[in-house]
Image (cartoon, rainbow, N blue to C red; front, side, top):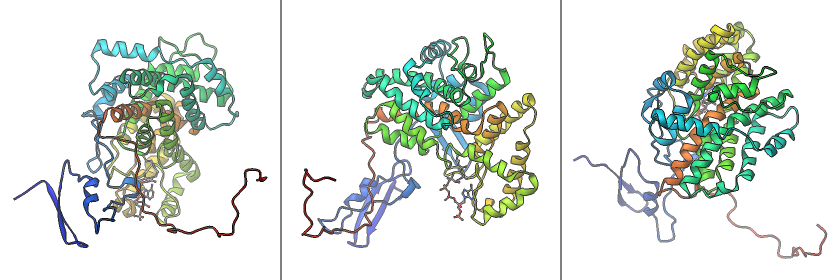
Length: 435
Ligand code: COA
């Protein structure tokens, strides 16, 4: 008879255990009862990099990596990208449902009322060197907001959490735009309440002396689509960081800063910047086969390819290709797109990539669009961090409501020296001694 259990026999003791299976998982804590003797700690699992461990239950984002499916709160990413605005999707991720017309108006107003930065935060930004990397400025400035809103520490209060969530979503485009203006030596532009989320961001980035900035509608929509695609991706490295730091009940500004720091690495959000640098390094289409050979020899990685979860075409990469088409109709074609298409074609026909199920991921094309829009590569990860802030916060709020969660604290397998001692004749340090 079929039963939703796993029956295991511990060969060390010949004892048999029946472990319940729920949603395709067994509870790791069930293993603790499997001991060789009373002194034994009990069995653990060893899973570096969480290759096969579910760390939480979540109702926000669903991914089927084998089929190339991504859904936010049940809605396919393709439908959301085509038919929704970024703030609608943000509302959906945070609240579980799309907003009604009235809820959307209220939500847009709320976010608009939180776009300004405290003047001291602007001064804080001015302290960075002229050539500071925008991602370092972004992470530090988000962390600095923690000093401006000390009440944010009250993370167990749902209403207080909501206030900080709106603040963060309102302010991250302003911080991002100011890091850009700082690196260009341009004066900061205040938010404009008449504009929508992406339009206002573009205003803060690019307004010069004109009294009113009007974003190109195709560019503003493309940016909105890119923001939707990047808004959440379940338990990726930075979201896991958000949950780990948030689990200590650190305030949301510090937790988002930590998550953004995790995003900055080239194996995560920093990959889009790395793709552009790689395309520049390859130089011309003729050099692609030689580059691929180096990748296959293990000397290089094909940046923007491969994914821990997707073993099929990343559905976001498909939508980004479409967005690239829209943008290039306005800006003219970027030669890097032709190189990327050729690289993709060659890689997808190659046994090395087929065998390992390596497909283009979201970062493969996003950098090319960002560059066509006028961003320099060091801004790319900041552009990723703006929408992902929504995902981080949705997961943080879910974590704070989850009665099963505690402070994240994995175990380890200790491999060091078990015990040793300093020489008995070594004297203790006296407080008066000069050290
Ligand atoms: N280029 C070349 N080979 C790659 C590769 C890439 N981008 N990504 C993975 N591989 C190879 C690995 O070398 C490994 O080969 P092996 O079995 O011969 O040792 C195999 O594919 C499995 O890769 P692995 O490193 O175990 O996968 P992972 O799940 O740990 O890593 C990434 C996932 C995303 C970190 C990895 O694919 C990568 O570094 N990609 C490039 C960076 C990138 O685009 N990141 C953005 C992710 S959205």
